[in-house]
Length: 335
Ligand code: PBG
Image (cartoon, rainbow, N blue to C red; front, side, top):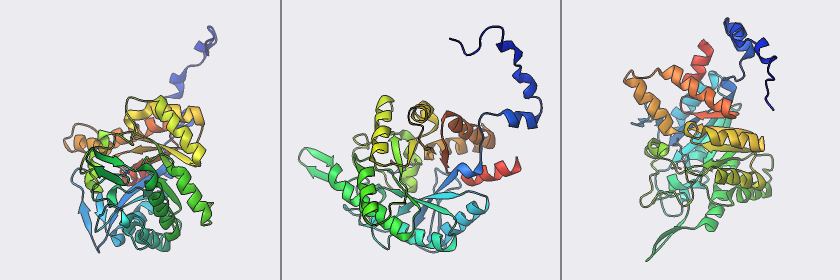
């Protein structure tokens, strides 16, 4: 049966409500708010270091002191949370830097929580930035090639997550896509008394070309092969829903869809199917494309960024993770 029975529908004339800005705002179905934004930041060791990432204008690898400045500026604009990635000085085949008590992320978290206690600090939990081969898990090589060792990777992920929380992280976000990692991290956190610390899981993470610029930023390009054995096939939507269901069963508090703009259908289905707190990650490639177009004068950066984020909200995202968060906060303030 139709939602709009004939004869009754024409009585409503939305056009009138669109005439004045106040009314438009009062009846708008979706809002974009600074309180929904998360800013990703890249930490690496050093002092006064701001190393530009060529494919992501405005984004830098930052030493902890500089990262603190950037986080403070964002927080003053009303951005409630940051998402931290680390680039270690040395990489190996066990990702030691990922769970070192004095690792770059652990160090930066301590500094942020000391100087900005109200800033909500989320850490990305993954091994790729810390592995010499650039994969997200332990790799076994033999005559037949190389394989990712899913189950032995879980222990290292749980160790990384707990080391972040011990340093003061408010939430951990596993992005590795190993099977069973949410449960492994949950159990380890609970065991150590961190049962109140939530997990935001990269639940539907697709093997995507949109991550290209990030791999420059995090220096995590796989040295052989690709991530298709553990990240999802862009052709599959039902599989994404199954992945999300599994992560919820394993104890995820927030589920994420990534990338965002090319996967709005997934976002919509995840939100309608589970009604769970849902995050959308507007990834590096999405950011770079807008920047490139804007630099050429081909698109309006502000309009296109705000419209894209609004579309993610409309599709079902509660949380918006975006490299443009500080600009967005400024634009929202200007009105
Ligand atoms: C690490 C990780 C990646 C991103 C977030 N965490 C890269 C990847 O899976 O290759 C991508 C973020 C972005 O492109 O902005 N596993």
